[in-house]
Image 1: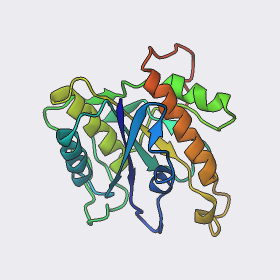
Image 2: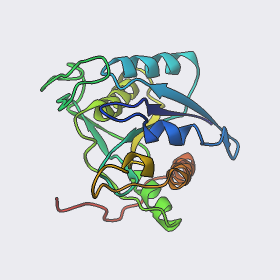
Image 3: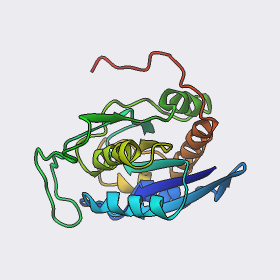
Length: 213
């Protein structure tokens, strides 16, 4: 199978994005499966356009997008993307949509069709801090996850898609008091393990990974 893994360029006040730094270090093959890498701009809609263009150019069985979630302690597969852009900061082209529907003919939300609980537990079994997330925010990360669901729904019915958030890496938190971080090597290992679990493409496991808040 062929897997497309996407990460973002830096945004806000950051000079790098751990999602892309980690993706650059992923192997080109996991077992017999080909891993291709795509850097996305942290820009509403343009990010989706690049993914769609890539999907039209070749056959990909899985698209896994990865983004930065500063403040999180763990690697967090996302369960769902919602049909709203509500940006607290501008994207890298100065756009700051507030309460904007992403796709007028789209569902209210799209759930990842990857085995997100299996992926989470696979990382934890290797000693990698991980948890399942039920919110991808309302910035470009959620936008991309939602757009992947929309593309699968409208144009690429056989596509498996998902999103994973990763923490800051240590060099990003030198001047950030009490901000968690994770080593780049651990993030790379976690993403590799998660992709391996996704490639099995079996039914997800039914265990409680929900949260009270």
